[in-house]
Amino acid sequence: MNPLFLREVQEKSDGPRAKMIELMRGMGAEVPQILYLFAYKSKATDHLSRFTQEVMRGPSPLSPGMRELIAAFTSARNRCPF
Image (cartoon, rainbow, N blue to C red; front, side, top):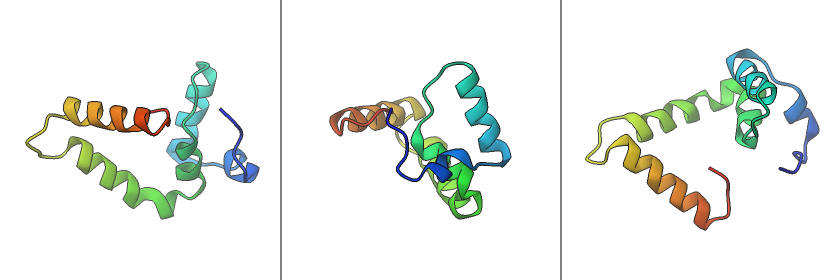
């Protein structure tokens, strides 16, 4: 994956999301770039994290697995890794 345009976003992170990024890097996993933003501006992105969890895991006629499948399919169609 290409480095972020604003390198300081990729380099400055703190809190629990920063730990997750370091774990992923340590395992050799590709880190989704959105995680860097969430770690960089955690106060500004906490509501997005809660929203995503509610949409993907909250009550719904669709199972969480089906919602994940829809998200993965949509990402693939947009040529965006999921």
